[in-house]
Image (cartoon, rainbow, N blue to C red):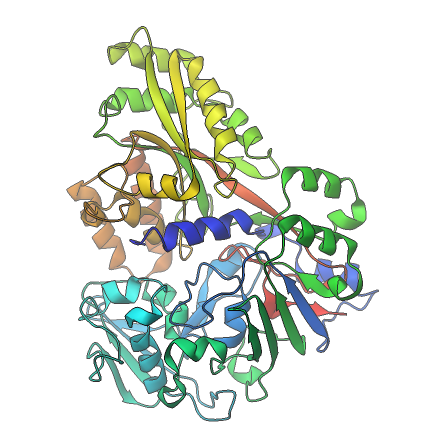
Length: 572
């Protein structure tokens, strides 16, 4: 996650617009079936599912897609080596086989990973899928003209940093071997116990070399999933998907593929989307959205209507909103000042500014409050619900600021960044009680992102947020706190410029673990250790709410993506 223009913005956009479900909070398949099927709880095949979205499904090419964005639509067409478990809540945060027979077999200290493909896999034209197709699909994702996808393979594969893709380098990547049609072997330049998670990224989608049309491939990518693209209008503004008759459920335990047709319509205003889902007239009765939330006002209206309230998915996506400090800027070079601010924060007012307790939960840990991330509860600077101004003043006095101090808080003016202006004002009001005068610097979206992600211009005190590309502590902690990921002349995410050898060494040690449960425990412990340095002030983990049409059934929303899973949905 070293490319902020791709990662931070796409993750932020996805997070702001996602509705998720966790555990019992989710509307599970049995519940949703009973409410929408007139007593017949079994989902059936047939019908058309409509998807109403704000953002177009642009760059519909597995090389160019960033998996954390785009909802579930790509997974209907593109199968990958592994995938997410398609279940509600925490169970959905597990990685499971997809094209492969297992989640990967590591050797040599997790630097070599081997996968065997299932037998009988076919494309939409009936030709067999081979390991060479997966190798080629990955290689083409390195081409400059197909950029936009996740950067991990470039970072992890031996020779990946210098490879330019198959259009320039016909030889290919030696670090990917295909000894036979069903076997593919990856050679990594360092241990990566979480490679099974990476194998869920769309870059591991098979692409037949003979059908590769370069930048035009997105117009008709060759399907390996249950649906094929029959029409792509205006670069993903409207996608029409129909069944891939060569897809076999016997090779795919995850995708149910109930509808006969899926009609994806994008470029719609969010208020229009929610109004159409609320009314559920005509085709909208069998419609869902993968990128539009209910806002506070809309939620209040829906909550007062039992029929509408029964059609709202609720839950959590792995995401944290926080205050970031730059210790290179005074007075934030003093840990006592950072701790004072941590004590002074009023999380109740912040949550109210974020839309209320229905849309946000207080955070005292940097890691999201989900098991898969390694969540370990801690509150190192207890502020209570409304801030501890007395403790903050005590620390400020120790730091030589007994008469208080004046600082500037940088934030975005965009509503796409978790209502930053309102949250900034809530922080300003809370710190005033502790004798800290906060001046607000609101910037437009692009200016804000450029400023906070540049080591040369990063402010000392600003609002930030982070979401992981898969449900683990690794992609959450490493980009922000690994000193080797500090970027001086480009996009930098390590805002605290932390370069602690013990932290770096522990990240390396955890990356060697292939026992993901053990790794999660270690990530949680590391989160607490880093938290002691008060380089961030966790504020809240967002909660999302999303409507779906009254004719939609078999609702599954996992903690992995936070998106209502289209691959499970059935329609009346």
